[in-house]
Image (cartoon, rainbow, N blue to C red; front, side):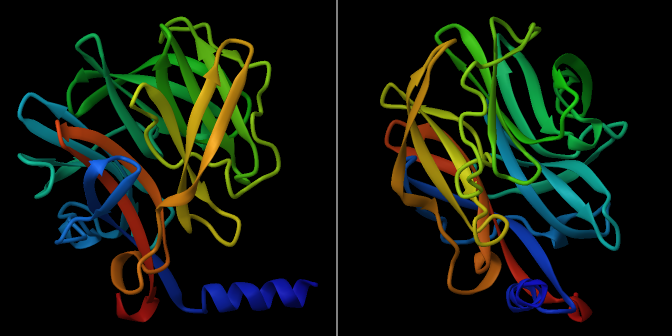
Length: 299
């Protein structure tokens, strides 16, 4: 059995190869049927000027007045270190890298940024601390401070927050991508409680790990997940949330994937983050990431 598993790993990720994530833009008339922008990727590791980057991933956007901001993780070349960085855009399609942001070791990845009552917040992944924390911008976009503690004592990945019916909810998976947990609170300060049906998905790594921003579309909420059943971050699925209360949860899977890998190039191995926003009355836009496998000796 061990030999079979090793053979499969070699087949999927041959020796002396590396994953290289880049960031792209998708667009369309609705967030459930989007197509690649004509000039993808819009950001790569080569755009990062202040860090020797191995790759960039996990993009999340927010628009303030007439300027778009995109936050994402930067993996340092030759190490497991991460940095938080951001880029800006006037139209959401053409992006300019700005800089990395000092985070005092509490940001790891998945910088899920959002606005509430004129203030700006972020719920990043920080699984080494065995916690989920919410951060608030002290001076947007570069200074952040801890705002509230959601939960501690377990390693969670990709926490995704949403406001619904006057309350807040956070979905997060465990590190083996098999279970999906749900927490809720009356306000961002908490106290946060685990939902009585949590984990709402058990032992299914094709559905459990969050894959981007939870959105509202046509008066319904939709969450997104990474399909990790064959390997990490192969595609992204969507789910229509049909019931979400303090005691009940129900969802329906959209059978057609929201994101699928391409045939060649920057997303030829997989895609795993989807952050959709309404651009105007007739158009949606989404920040996505994808990855390819490259020869480590030629990078």
